[in-house]
Amino acid sequence: MKVLFVYYLPSGGVETLNRQRCKALKEAGIFCELLYMQQGTGYHNICDIPVYVTNDNQEIKLLLEKQNYSAVMICSDHLFLKRIRELGYSGPLLYEIQGLGTEKEARNWMVSAQPFIQTYANAVFYPRTSHLEQLCQTFIPNVKSYSFHNCFDTDHFHYVTSTFHAKNPIIGWVGRLEPNKNWYGFLQLVNMILSKNSNINVWMFQDATLASESEKTKFQQFIQQHHLEEIVTVHSNIPHQEMAIYYSIIADSGGFLCATSQVEGFGYAVVEAMSCQCPVVSTDSDGIRSFLTHNETGKIINIDDLDKATSECLEVFNNAEMKNQLVKQANKKIKSTLDPKKYNENFTKMLKQISQKS
Image (cartoon, rainbow, N blue to C red; front, side, top):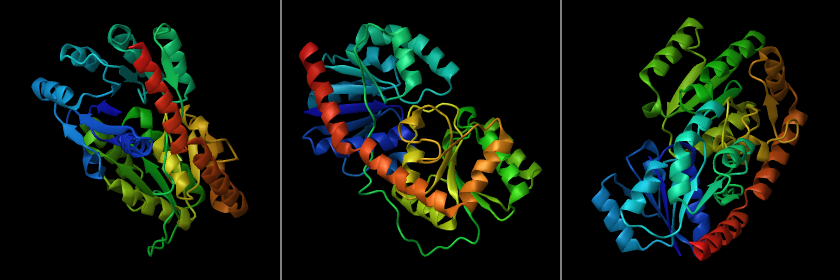
């Protein structure tokens, strides 16, 4: 079987997901290819997977005719559902829902997507996330839906020993400079932590190409107004495999990854940190509930209660026994919940069912 995954551009969590599942599904005899509408900073992460970057109708039409895909899965871009049917593709077509932003943004998105999904898609897929399940039940109750956990290969992305030794504990943050990732709330929390412990550093990993100029300006103004120039280091577009080194350094420093998203469909940064023995402190963004339980596999905070959130962060710094237990349980949870073999089984079953009905 051969499957085509379609998305706007290679960047962020979907780019990570596509690489992870293409590799996993290959083990099950399902060969995968990727189609992106435009270039993105994550393109350099892709290896040993056929990938096409085009938004040209004729090129896409020729690709579909030549490759004869067993199924096509389109993530987020509901307009492409109609487009691919008009280009002559008549096989099984799945609409995939991953991160659609805040709950308000996600609802607005589904209002627009609803008629396209109902008309052109054979089924819908989304990761095990309650707000996505509710959206599907509300807007497309008559469309067949599938939901199971994404996958992650901990055999190839894990803790690594580094020669770099940080002088201070490091708080890491990964995301775009946009409201849903809540970089502003994160930096407010950093300020509170600094008032209790000035000996920390902050590493922020961003894709600057995806941030608006207004958000970049607001970010720089906050850094300057709060004199964080010597505290915050911005890392842009780090190759994915190198991120294992950074997460490991953060872990060794005695720090943690802080995730402050309002809503996430999944949350690959959290998973990656956990797989590298890096403690995680996160807001309850829904998608993380599958693998992050408060005081068992990490810390869940309310970013609106900065005093309480600060106390939780300081406990990670100061309670080594608790931190080690969180790390141990988190790593175990990732391996069991996001097992690529389980993903293969679920995906194969889904494909067979859709192929029989389409």
